[in-house]
Image 1 (cartoon, one colour):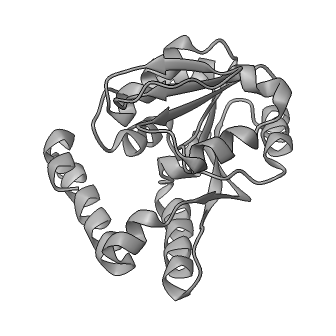
Image 2 (cartoon, helix red, strand yellow; image 1 turned 180 degrees about the vertical axis):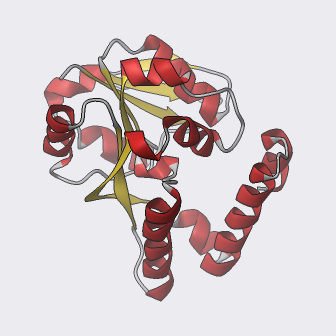
Length: 215
């Protein structure tokens, strides 16, 4: 499996470094960090690309530079399960014509993080709608066939999942852990309601650039 790992970022922090260090040494040369922030920095053994900010643009830019037959898109605040590489290899062996995402877990304790995790599981089951913080593993052929990530300031993950479609998507049982920072900052209920409102606006055809202003 020839793999490229694409991580968009606006800044370097401990979480990004932790993610990079969790990737086996022999795979780190396949990591592409797409920097959309004002800082300039470098990671030894990694490919660093500077880009204008915007997650959709950064993800698309990383994919354009990728040489792997399989693309693994990750957020910089993710923590991968120990078995992640075996899980992806198994997917390649059994479902090479489909894309794959992980189940989501937050790095926080309490009732509301678990409630949100169950909501995410329901959303994936009922609507086949994982978000970008669950990671996206997809063959380059399928990625190119559906047109890849679009240059969108928001909802780029919803857009690409829609084009992949339920029939070509698998949500695994292994968990990727993501930061709960924005939920702790604004409150879980308020953030959940606001995220749902933004998604509704997008479904109603509101320009993502407009949604970004209130997000």
